[in-house]
Image 1 (spheres, rainbow, N blue to C red):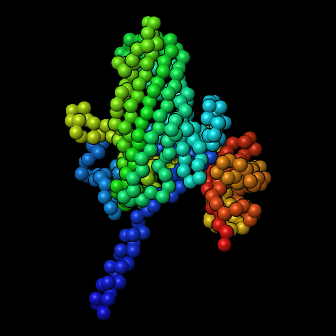
Image 2 (cartoon, rainbow, N blue to C red):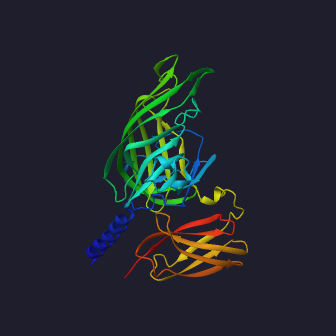
Image 3 (tube, rainbow, N blue to C red):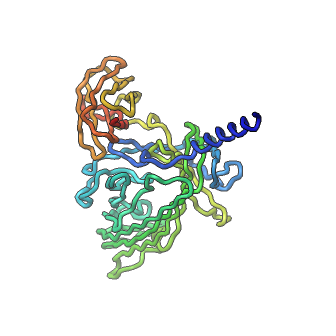
Length: 379
């Protein structure tokens, strides 16, 4: 009897352990209207510090609740046409941040997301007027769904771009170029080499540890003094480079729970240091041009079949519109409502096919106050 009880307990313990190991779903892939909210700690951390134990492994407990929120970065994913250079990316569905940068264009491809390229300033510090439009060929696939512990994924991207006149300034010395051309290619390797739980000051999540290694070659030439010249002496990060990022990714959140861009320490190149970036609640970053920053919205049941109730709290009294739309931004249901105090709004979703949708609430001035995800199932 005792032996049978021991076997049963071991089976139960093993079951709970297996349940903690997650498989990456699609929640880390951005959808239209979703917000991207990250905190930044200005302090460098020794990445291999034993007290943090941020290394790979199975059934790990990572704890970085020591980080401080010294800065905040927030943005949102918008319809591609919101980007000023959307005409250069005709198949793009979304426009928004990518690893904290603005100006990237994305295409939704079934259950994956492709980076089509970007427009902007690749060397904003040294050459703030060097602006380019850079369509990728081939395009880059963001970390795909379905990955779990032990999986790997490799992808490549490249672009060639030309620019107009720009100025490069290093240590107070400026060079004016009549034009420029940029050639860049890269290979990105993802390795899922750990799983467990990760704790920050804002919560604890089940995560996968994903190590991203990017092998990149970049070349910038400037036409100055009547000749094409290599700009490597003036711009950082040119030539061959290897970039390493460690991410802890949840299957329930858009942002990495925490990520580290590793760089060699100046005094000891074998030791890696990093400034952590981490997920923070959206409420820490105010919504631009919207006075109602404390609104909350929740739908239940979710997943739903035919009818849902939307619980809405913190809204000012007035007229609003509830929109339900697909992942391409097409509005499928639009329901005007009048709110006075906390409310529960019934909504018929029986016309929707099984799948994932988004819903938001918009005030009378057209400001989107909140966006959430809704899953429809069919028996």
